[in-house]
Image (cartoon, rainbow over all chains, first blue to last red; front, side):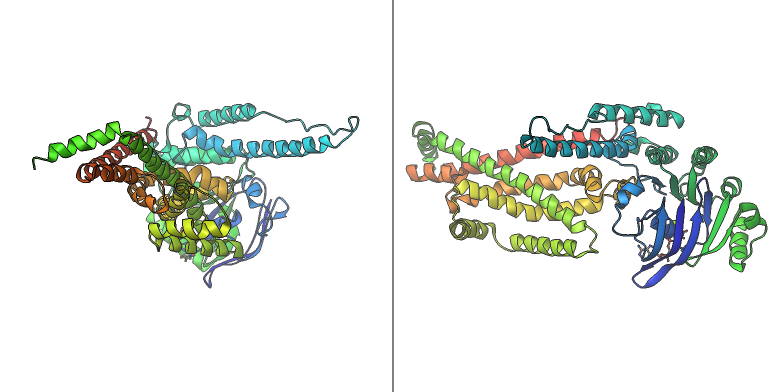
Amino acid sequence: MIDVINLKKSYDGTEVLKGINVTIQKGDIVVILGPSGSGKSTFLRCLNCMEDPSDGNIIFNGVDIADMKVDINIHRRKMGMVFQHFNLFNNKTVIQNIMMAPVHVQSQELRKIKRKNWWIRIKRIFQKSQAKQALLSLPYSKQDIQKTALNDATKLLKRIGLEDKANVYPSTLSGGQKQRVAIVRALAMNPDVILFDEPTSALDPEMVGEVLDLMRSLAKEGMTMIIVTHEMGFAKEVANRILFMDQGQILEDASPSEFFSNPKTERAKEFLSKVLSVK
Amino acid sequence: MGNISQKITRFLEIFWEQNGYVKVLEGLQNTILIAITGLIIGIIIGTLIATARVIPRYKLAPKILNGFCGFYVALFRGTPIVVQLLVFYYVLLPILGLKLTGVQVSMLVFGLNSGAYISEIMRSGLQSVDHGQLEAGRAVGLSFGTSMRKIVIPQAVKNILPTLGNEFISLIKETSVVSFVGAADLYVAFNYIGSSSYEFMVPYLVMALIYIVIVLIITLLIKLLERSLKKSDRRN
Ligand SMILES: Nc1ncnc2c1ncn2[C@@H]1O[C@H](COP(=O)(O)OP(=O)(O)OP(=O)(O)O)[C@@H](O)[C@H]1O
Ligand SMILES: [Mg+2]
């Protein structure tokens, strides 16, 4: 589903990603591990072009989205992203946060059709009465858009047990609640893949569980996920692939059991001995 | 000082009997009209400039746009408002062959001028909004423009509301120079009363009083607006 070919990224001359090649299959649950500064976030952010790759290709559903000419907004809708600091829209209520993108996208479609219809109306003035071009029919109305979006958003809120928080602003939620809302906000676009950058790192320990549970349930449903995390237990249990990164390269690409019991590279061994001894 | 009461009587006489109050109302209307229109134009221009200046500058077009905006701001902040009024009224209008009244020119110039100041205010407002807000908008597939318009700018405006209020207050005060291009504002009205009565003390005092009252009212309105916006932040 995602083919990363020779992806490179540099900031002012320093190369942070040094040619990454990897293929993500549909249904993969990939956990990216690696020491701080190894380029995990940069890699993840290059995948949906939040950072523009300096070189290389990212083929997503057959389209090279690293190409500056493609309309990245269309492809981002199919690639959800969950941030360490939640980044809920502060000026929108919880339900508006979830409805925002779906409503906007569909309204845009509607506006496109209406614009075309205006052209047709103008053309019709000059056409003979038998040959008049028919107006395009509108697939839905503005109210329909709102209604379906509200419906879907309410279902998503029910799923995370926060339907009573629909109309409050994010500032009143706990960290765990914010992150769960952020996850369903990504879900609202029916993405093909969701990218997570340390989704539990900014949470109080007692809230980590609720967020991981939600991610676990997504994994069970077959959602493709790419996750940067320091939660080793979660990685072992949920991932089907571990990518180990160091200094801008992927050093290992293995199943969790293989990686944790039998790391191939020195760096991975070193990394594991450090993180596992802390626990 | 026995003639203070005399002066007041003289003032009231002109104010009520020789249409002084009509002039004052007209002047008040023009002052407020110029300030409000100036503020609205200023907010629009300021927001556009501030937004244009945060567009990522990889390509040539945003670079040129940024350069132009920088020039605009420097131009309008670098010259006195009176000079701008005079140049517009006596230089630009004749060159362009346009006929505008003094009030119209004042509205335009105060709009362009406050646009330069508000762009700086707005810029700090945009900077006060966490970058993650824009990123989250982009991440769900909204365009840069839509993310700014629906998410970042509303939050920025809320953060700069007090500063924007101050800008409006200084706008009100600065309009007292529009008589340079023949616009009849409060100053013109009270000057008329003064020269009709050969007595300027009371008219100018009353004028000062009116300015203070306007400013106090605006201050109060901003406070109310801020409070209602804060409420919408926490509904729980
Ligand atoms: N915007 C930027 N400008 C310059 N350098 C950057 C930028 N973003 C990241 N870097 C550099 O790129 C390198 C990789 O950073 P990145 O955030 O991808 O690491 P990471 O693996 O996510 O680390 P962590 O575990 O601490 O989050 C670091 O050396 C960092 O200093
Ligand atoms: Mg990181």
